[in-house]
Length: 276
Ligand code: 2HA
Ligand code: ZN
Image 1 (cartoon, rainbow, N blue to C red):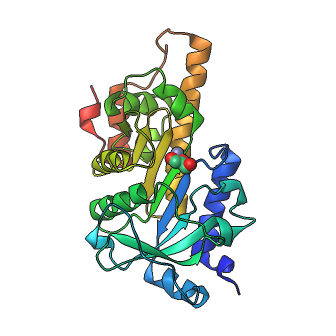
Image 2 (cartoon, protein in one colour):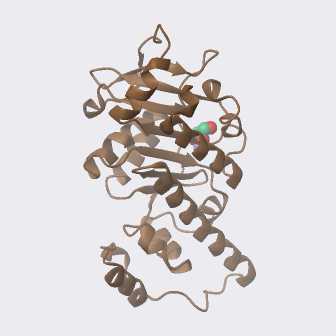
């Protein structure tokens, strides 16, 4: 048995590889973090390095995440390498009892550090854990091309994007019934984008980063990957329709009444504020 064979590392690695195969992770683009369960931690603890790394302050604080462990992709690491050089490309970090610093306890060999977006992920883990009574454990950021293309031409607000995505592909409103948040263009990796995103993630489980990509959260790898995949697929269809249709309004779309009816029949609460 090796740490690479534990379920949490296997699920994490598979998700990185799936995202690479989708074409969402050019170069070192994108990042993934997972808040581990007690069982996950017990399974990987035998593989921890003898001497943990030094405590590193994150510049953000979340007391509710004190003492938790996260699997994280590494800063500057390539998603396409995660399956091949796992302990170099990803690592496990422990959070201190103030909830403001991490230290590396496994992986990120050769002097690696957690993703440049780790403070953003960390703050959003806190928000999503609170919003879902602890259910959400995964934060995933990818450079999804069709979503980025939409941000080049549409007004950058949650209502516009949610409606366009919902009306393009029928099951979207089932997958993200609250809609998606939209963050205007910002410098990546800083506290400004961390705070702006975390404000939106109180309401949504997905936020679009203009001219940059998508930021998603969920309870497990399958659901979170599925959310990213569904949003990007709808965006792809939207872009293809726009390309064959020019600037004409789409002749056929799902009506607001149709969207409401899906909510009723599937017994899910949809974001009424985004319906006419
Ligand atoms: O390069 O995607 O947003 C990693 C990123 C930063
Ligand atoms: Zn990015």
